[in-house]
Image 1: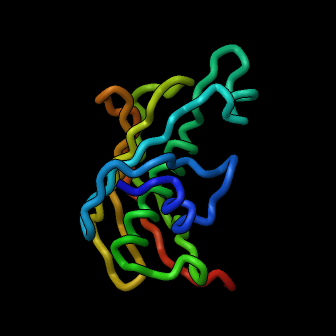
Image 2: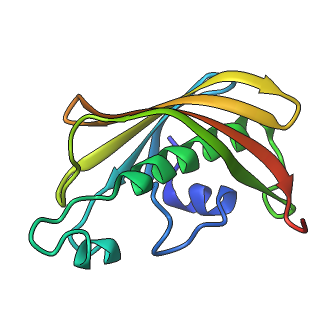
Amino acid sequence: MIDIQQILERLPHRYPFLLVDRVLEFEQDKTLLAIKNVSINEPFFAGHFPVKAVMPGVLIIEALAQAAAILASHTAEWDPSGSLFYLGSIENARFKKIVVPGDQLYLSVEILKRRANVWKFKGTALVENEIVCTAEMTCAEGSVSL
């Protein structure tokens, strides 16, 4: 298990944009399972939507990308102080159900391919064992000073 302190060491994101609370499972070079506790206190709920709070789909994708970055950083053992993990593309994104306050979003990412500093992942987000989102993402490690 990877706790929030270790996540903060690996990701540059901070509140309100850090979207991973804990890593439950990690298999180097393969998969990672993390959680995001969705709270009514999230700042985006004030406007999305005032009549029914729904987590934006782009933030579910971002949460999957952050989980992918954690998997890649632990697999490749790079120094996070000198590099960032950039999202390059999103393919085949599908949204099946909405995510609302009180949900616990499970973020499952799997490495599909890796060439040098470019990675391709399959991401699946679930709530109560039901798929809410799937997507393939390509990400690349790059220097902080681009």
